[in-house]
Image (cartoon, rainbow, N blue to C red; front, side, top):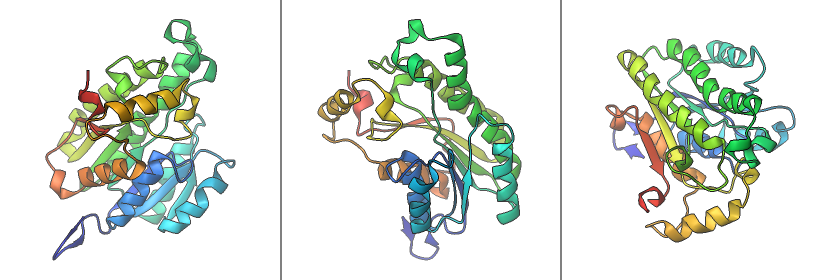
Length: 260
């Protein structure tokens, strides 16, 4: 997206993309889309095991920062923002694409989910977004945008989505409340709800291939979305063309969510 006189729509803006696992992850699609629209990009990865799967792709798109981030480890999120302060001195957008639940709690059905597993899923997948917003907001001195990745299972029962349904519902609600609290500062907040995608994170869901096939069959557009569809939607919402949009859950699923 470009304008005839102003160049790329996000030229020079600074975006933090949290949760890149590899070149097939939603977060990487976001990082690549923001770069295509002229943004400067910082990327986080979960740990040393992920680094070889992330660094070549971060280098390929010209990411300026590549930082470790395990949101379960005290101080790591703060360390990311310390690096942003040193390198950029501020921030314009931040994308949270981090979700996790213990396998036994994810695959065992909600009724059998342990209190400990539920708490871990909420902390990693939802409250870490609140912590991210708390750190990002003071650095968005000219306003900005925050994004959290949700899924249709937040509002509808999706077979085998289990504990992540309530967790994503909490995430979408958190995005709305943060939009309310941060609106006076010119900071807009969106939950993004992509259709099912072939990502490593999704592979932990039981019978995920069946979910993909069903989504493709039911989508009014007749096909699944990809990571760049999600990325360009976020990038658009970060531009001046979406300056009055905030607090929504935005579906990027080819229309699957409208089907009964």
